[in-house]
Length: 155
Image (cartoon, rainbow, N blue to C red):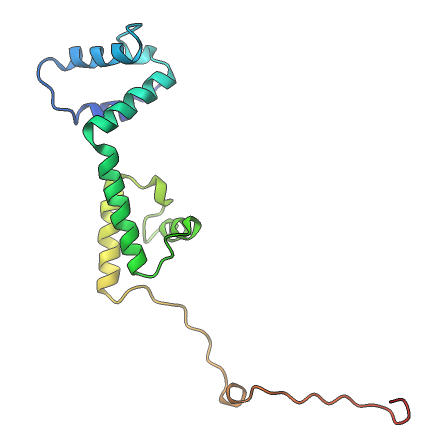
């Protein structure tokens, strides 16, 4: 692993009493079965297990779930089919909405997305594409007469 931002983002959210370095080392030792106290020496599986545990301890998963649920509810209110994930992703990929897939939106991005969705709702919702207007002559007439010439004697 080269980037430990996930670990430190979660680690900094924990309430700490005492020395931070000692607590970090004891946490790493716990997930490596006392093999090492260094983040650099952790395997990818150990690192992911440690971060998953930190997410549960900080309640991060619950916060993300709440924000995603709220954003989906607002999308549904605007008429986006939230039971179809490609539709939700396509909507979110619009640069004016979020510019990325729904699953890739961060916590702060979800908060900003909710703000945009509320503004869209306040301003009248999403505008539907208008269908081109038909001429009055063809709009009233649904039947068509087809003339098929035949040569006498063949029919």
